[in-house]
Image 1 (cartoon, helix red, strand yellow):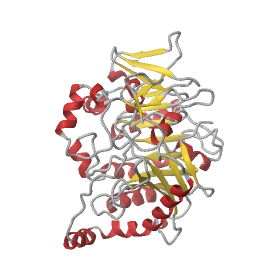
Image 2 (cartoon, one colour; image 1 turned 135 degrees about the vertical axis):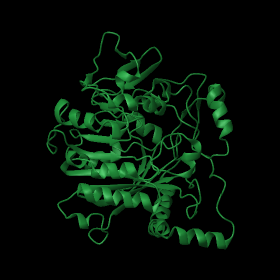
Image 3 (tube, one colour; image 1 turned 30 degrees about the vertical axis):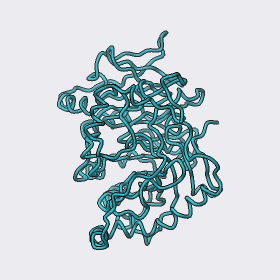
Image 4 (cartoon, one colour; image 1 turned 135 degrees about the horizontal axis):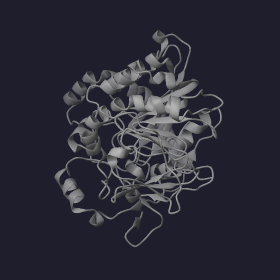
Length: 431
C-alpha cells in the first residue's frame, strides 16, 4: 500500500509526511495506483533569514498586541520541540522524499517576470508554467451563475479514447461533476486545458457563496452519498481550508482572501451543518491569528461540534530545522488543523476548553508550493467508521481526491495535467 508517511510514533501523535506524495497517493482509487509524480518546488535546505524585530522594546510591544496568539504558542512550544527531537532520533535521512521539479529556466516568461517583480516576497515555491487562472474564471463567471437555470449533474464517462471534453469553462462552472468510475478520466476544456479526474470523485468548481444551492441539490437529490454512518446527503467528515487573510498573500496576490472572515460567518449561518453525519467530524485549517480561532469556535458552535484535537503542521527544512524561528513574533513556523466532532452538547459548551481539552498531534513536513498543504486523507481515514466506505467533503479544495467531494473556485488547480509527470525526463531534476 502506498504511503506518504516517513515516520510515525506508535501513539500516532507524531508524524513526518511528504506533501507532494500525500497529494499524489490521494488520487489513488481501490483498483488504481497513483497517476504519477506531482511537480513541486525545491525543498528548503536552510531556514529563511530572520525578519524578527531586533530591540527588546519592539518585541515586548508585539507580544502585548498579540497576547492571545502568544498564549496559544506557549502551550504548543514544548510539544513541538519534543516531537521534532523524536523524529531526529528515529528517522534517518532527509525529511522529504525526492521531488520532481521543473527547472526555473523552463518556466514561461510571464511567470519569470512575476517572480522578479515579487522577489522581495518570501514564499515556498514558484507558480507552474501556464497554470490556468481559476480566479479570473471565477470573477468572470460569478455574474453568469446568478442567471443560471437548474443544471443537471455531469457524469464523466470512459470513452474509447478516455477523454471527456467541455467546450469552455462556463459549462464547468457551478455544476456538480462526477467521475463514477474506478479509473482516472481525462477532462478537456476547449482545446487548451486538460485535467486528471481521480476515481469516484465529485467536484463543484465555483465560489461557495455562489454555489450553495448547487451543492445542496447535488448532495441531497442528484448524488446522495450513503454509508453505514451517514444518511443520504451527509458526510462523515467535512474539511475546510479557508482563504484566511494575511499580509504575504495580500502582497503576492496569489488568491482571493477572506479579509473580514465573512466566509466563515456565511458557513456558520448556512445549512451546511445539516450535511454532517450524526457522529461526523469537521476539520478546519487556521492561521496563528486569534481571529481565525474565534471564527472556528463560532462555526463549531453553530454546527454543534466539539473541538477534540489540534494537529500542528510544523514546517521544516530538509534537515528538520523549523523554516523560521519557533518563537518568532512575525511568523510562526506552523499552522493548526482544528478537528471537531459532532456532539449533543448545547451551543454554550462548544469549544470550551473546560469541557474537553483537545489532544495535540504534531505533523512535520517540508513546505511545497506556496500555501499547498499536505493531503490529510491518510491521517483522517483511521477516524472513519469504515475507512473503505465513508464520505468526505473538502471545502476550498485546491485539488481533487479519489472518493471525495471537492468544492471551491480552485478545485482543479493541482489536477491540471501540467502539474504532473509520469516519469523523469532530461528536463526534470531530482533532489
